[in-house]
Image (tube, rainbow, N blue to C red; front, side, top):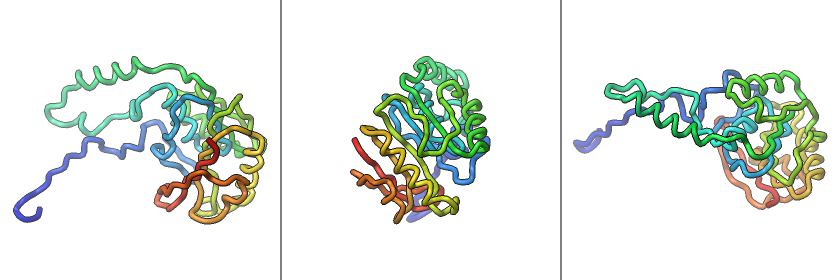
Length: 220
């Protein structure tokens, strides 16, 4: 309240909007679902360090034209005067626009525990058939026929302190195997990017779980 005026806000969402309703468990360095949602579904996608699968599952949902949050409830549904019929009609209309993803989506990780978690999350989202999972080191990650988009959130010495240098070197090897591919790599504010052996065409400041990071865009 200020100067005789007051602002009243109503929380229509409830849980934060980045929570889609499918991720029951996360890995050691989780990525917000909304930060993973920069894919348009119109090209193959590869995440060679998939962790709990957030990037690949978000990509599959976008490619399938599934609206974000389709599997969750919102706070406004408990408001007095809410019309459940109208809400369900909107959900049915949006669901009618869904489709099978038109391009392959691959996700891999060398950690079998992380890979199992990613597969469970994909099943929880109803998208297990849309993502091809494989166990592999990033340098040898199986990629769909491209060119396409490589999107990855590699370790960079904050929440996963061990193996950051090794991971970024492996990523550089993989990029050499994928001529013509674009890449979107989330990394720290400084360091590690030199292992990619490519100069980013654009660098964007982003926040990832409270950490100040950069999104490196390569190729394209």
